[in-house]
Length: 116
Length: 113
Image (cartoon, rainbow over all chains, first blue to last red; front, side):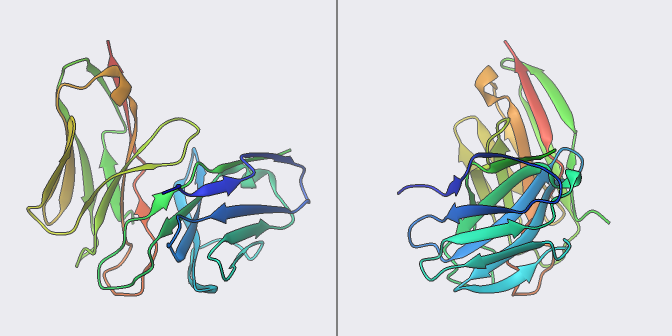
């Protein structure tokens, strides 16, 4: 099975611009989560989507948004970019079959965003 | 308050020198404890999932164990290619309906030939 794929792998933007990142989950996986990773804060949860619905959202400003399509592919958008948004953005997928136990999440290679 | 805490932050080992990494968590009613390996500039690579106290899982030179308050990642006779940052993660609360993971800050392991 192909793993989680993310595009683009690298991006350079300037302050005030907006950016859209894309994630394709593992085939058959219906849950997609997004994380931001920075040297100071580590990995932080942004949001999670399942069946085109956002189920969980982390503590990030409204400039960060996302969506999921019917084929489970997901996009995240960051508007009005700030220097502090420079980070590695990671997407993870899991089956989304539910249950009391947390499912394993499988990560993609990430998109490295640099805001100048 | 951090719910997932890893120690040490960094660890240097000689090749063949076995050691353990620690991950302590404060979430009651744990719904899963996850270990990942991350190489610089890459996404985390899944290693192990543990669900019950007393559970152990092994893969090559790595063994993960779980107690009610912490998890250990034991590395036996490490090789230079084991050098990476090892991340521990758990759901932030025990109730069903949490689909996110809270990560520790990681342990950066360096194995010297």
